[in-house]
Image 1: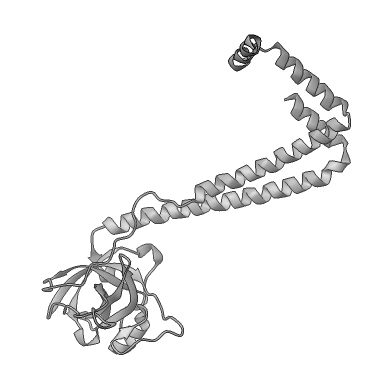
Image 2 (image 1 turned 60 degrees about the vertical axis):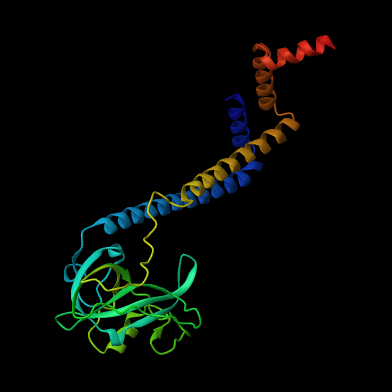
Length: 285
């Protein structure tokens, strides 16, 4: 404590240290802001994880109760389960190129579903591997014919990828606007659905897509926040060490007095076990 007071007194009376002190304070403020930003990012990540879990485990709701209008969708609706009834438009089915599942390249199968009111909702029915002899699946399992009830999890429209194209019957991304043009009917363009189930079921379905990552993983935000706090403290410790060393070399009376008090306190302490052992070993030599 005496060492700290001595350094503070020296800073107060010696103008040479005002600029370094101002720089250390400015640096600490920057570190504090970055630390706060990391804490905020951690809170956002925790909220997003909790929302995914809540949406994923919620009961299916009618599509019209969740999406307000054909363009309706908000990010907090991702992974919500919706239930929709209609008829698959097999002739308008598309394969999404350049997708992966478990590290394997392939396609996702988009099948538009026409609802009783004439609107169309796009269903992603799953994944198909690249074919054994061509850059297309060997077979595409057909969806159920006739009226079908689908439970799906909402996902956001991916939009178009500039400069990317695809052969006929394929699409480079899940661009719902492009799907709507192909279908030629009013289509939900804010979101599509990852299929969970179909009733009646198809004889064979594509491979189900992977679920989201659950758990309490909040990334590295907490460790980074603590690191920025440590950097701020290091700045002040480094400044204090530099000031104290400079003043001691200059013979500052306050610093020298603090050193004498520290030495006196150390001399009154009982020797440590290590010191006792070292003295005994030295005596035996």
